[in-house]
Image (tube, rainbow, N blue to C red; front, side, top):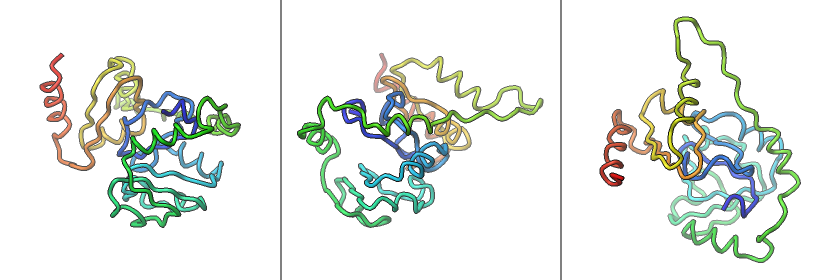
Length: 209
């Protein structure tokens, strides 16, 4: 859908893994433990509209209810739960709908098929810069970012990945790139220690192939 829509996409930390992060229209994550790339893109491009899809716009997803998300004059919020509308950010239009149905109708609308990438997309891509890994003290033989990137290179393209609660979750959200058909689950809703390993065991039991 990202390639088809050609719209710049930012996801919240809680939604990490919901889409592949490799398409050029993917800008980055916003919220808890996220990098600054998405914030820089929003600040630089100053979009005239923002489309919120299936988010409660809570504290963790919005980096502490950042005012930057309130700046676009046109704000559209799509969700199946009407109680999420205008709760944390006033929106111009509230649409109660299933996200999949909404996106299907949006992409089927006239003028959205096979259109050229918007000219500002290249500018937005240029803003995305990989974060430099700071020098590592001698007492730390393996830097967490190096570990994350090693796992990223070794994990199969169809892997189901569960983050654990704690610092490891922040490192994964900030530096792990979700690719291909991978599924990435962040247990921020549950938030109990050990939920990551339990989720992995449960997923293996459900899909033992």
